Image (tube, rainbow, N blue to C red):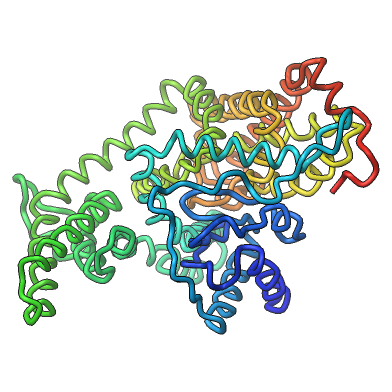
Length: 502
């Protein structure tokens, strides 16, 4: 979208989330605008979802508005400009007990006795299910996983860009075209990956309350070429050993060292002593402990992924493809980003992402079946029509929270479709046609440019496309035959009153 359109979307969103005074922080990932709000009670969820540019909303530790990959960065930038022009003035913060407001404003009610449930009803039901799931899963372990995800989400755009450039370089090399350009594309695609540890360290310190640049400085030790001269545990270290796992551990240690030093050092000496102690002790700990341990963990991750596909392709694909939608529902899918990143650094691609992407295929097939089964429910069918293009491109939240999860059974049948697609890709991997992705972020049709495999792009695309087709068909058939009881089908197909569709 143009800057003018992005600004108009931002201007439409701002009053619906309580205005500038209610916004504490603004960030975005691949598809979502993430807002830290002082108070969620002024948020008009229904009005937000009614905006043409909004694909859905997700309530988590931040309030998330799904805009899609094409628009989210531009809208976020325009919203920040609006906030700079009208600074927030709220005094309050989040509730001390972490509770959400009772209910969801604008969730919508039933259209009336005897009327078919509408998309607004499903949205309200989805909000309730999401709130209850969030309450059940606010455990220390899962909250920690979300914080780790927050470290890696800002890195996804660069991972995608570098992955596509690497794929382009590989295609040109295979064709024997433009060798000089292929040589130049090498550093363009690999420069970021060679320094990703620094970015991970920076974001880790920022997320956990330390000084970001100190986290980056300590994590930078991991990728410094001079570590090859250092011997630890009887072996010379290798630059990059431990990868993002080592960088994450080093930066977390740096945060704790910084806090500990700052408590002990007089304020007059803080500016000199605290950074020095943090970098010195954190760097030495990274060299003589963390790099070796993290290297063993990273190697184990690579071996485990290889073994999983080589020996349990069918079962692994079935389980991973079938369980990924629940992870998306709980917002925990991004905790897998460090694993994907480690595999990309070690093997050049992550073989897990194409399997996990099959969950979206199952949901697309499910949504098509729901659309055809509920032929008299104009409201729900309109929601599916608006959300289905995003679902084909791998943005699944609008269908999850607006259709399949509130309906109940279709969410399960969508998982069945994902399991079938995952099994297809897993079996291909077991037979020697493992498909990987050179970057993380997109799924669905958007993943095709990032595919890699032992037999070239065309073979990888054929396997991945076969998995998508399997997921579509299985999700459709499972939903068509098992997605509704006779009673619920009659209820949702009841003639809705005029004007109830969205």
